[in-house]
Amino acid sequence: MVMASVLQKIIPHYSLARWLLCNGSLYWYQHPTEEELRTLAGKQQLKGKGKKDRRYNGHIDNKPLTIPKDIDLHLETKPVTEVDTLALHYFPEYQWLVDFTVAATVVYLVTEAYYSLMVPSQEMNISIVWCMLVLAFAVKALFSLTTHYFKVEDGGERSVCVTFGFFFFVKAMAILIVTENYLEFGLETGFSNFTESAVQFLEKQGLEPQGPVSKLTFKLFLAMLCSLIGAFLTFPGLRLAQMHLDALNQTTEKFTQFLLHINFLAPLLMLLLWVKPITKDYILNPPLGKESVPLMTEDTFDTVRLWIIIVLCALRLTMMRYHLQAYLNLAQKCVAQMKKEAGRISTTELQKMVARVFYYLCVIALQYVAPLVMLLHTTLLLKTLGNHSWGINTESESSMSAAEAYNPPFSELPCPEEKMKATVTQITVALGGLKTIFTPLLFRGLLSFLTWWISACLFATSLFGLFYHQYLIVA
Image 1 (tube, rainbow, N blue to C red):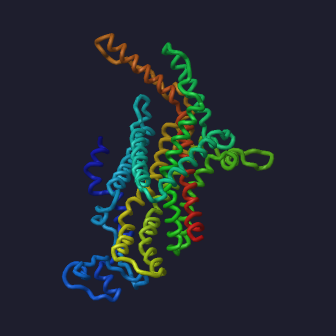
Image 2 (spheres, rainbow, N blue to C red):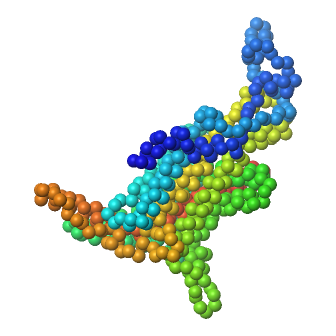
Image 3 (cartoon, rainbow, N blue to C red):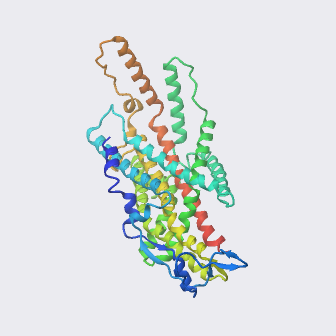
């Protein structure tokens, strides 16, 4: 409730979303007026409003004014201000997602501090609800953006989304049959634990002891979810590749270029964290001759993996300014490309070509931020629901048994009526039984796979975008 009040009272005055766009580091290109274009084209400026009408046989010729494409045009720049962002497309969705993510992250940090100090045993971790709401808002924003591509009749965006959706479905099915010796998500162990716990719960309730869902059905639904996620992340990955290339070409500092490369390869680094022969086997059992001296324990490796993902997410947020400025520079890039072409262009088309770049700034920002938000809060859920630890030298909470972690002893509530007391007891026992079904092993396997999959989709789409913008367009 306190954080909800903060969202209502403070966010309208202090917003991270507005600061990321309006901190003075971003500037956009203003489209030239018709009078400026007339002057540059060597035409006489007209007095009064509108353009000069030409009469032929008593009829007025309303043809749009055209100018040569090789006109000596230089666009004026202006810093992005709060007033400018009010008219941008998708600005409310972008501001809500970023500000709500900040509030949810603060709630998560406060909750983690409270749990580390007080160690409560019979309280619900409210930060889980906030993290799930963030994921829901991020998916909703990406879904809204994707639906616009399906509304375009002439463009090929719809075909691209459908093609990548089927590609990621096949890829997910192939990944799900890979043995745990290569990709150690823990899905097999988590699903087996889930099935056994469900059977035991049904037996205690006097029902038929049968698993709730088969392994094939579970993997099929998971592959369909992965296909949707891949389709939603297609154009964010393609756009990231173009912004990455433009940012590299416009940056001269070597250290900044190095950070841009690390930021682009961050999803690949996250992918390798779950490839067991490449990372975990070499860290837990390094080949150091006859003696095997592990560098860290398995619990410590899981903690380090979480920290690496969070650091890479922070790096991506830091490099957001360079990518957005690279996108805004597309206006000048389009004008420079136009000057190399022959022929004429109408003043209206030229103005639209320059203005639409800034108009879709928040769409690009949303495509940049939404995958980052999904990756960050999936990792936070993995830590909490998977019973991992933030401390490197501390033992993981996963060593606790499921009964100790999720079945606290029930203390009878003072109730005057025995019937109500029995009802409360039954409800408490039922909820405790459900908690034994959805164990940390299940959440650890499922959330590890989803975290890995989001990184895989981002890297696959951005790699294809890099190949497309650097080689196919040139060819």
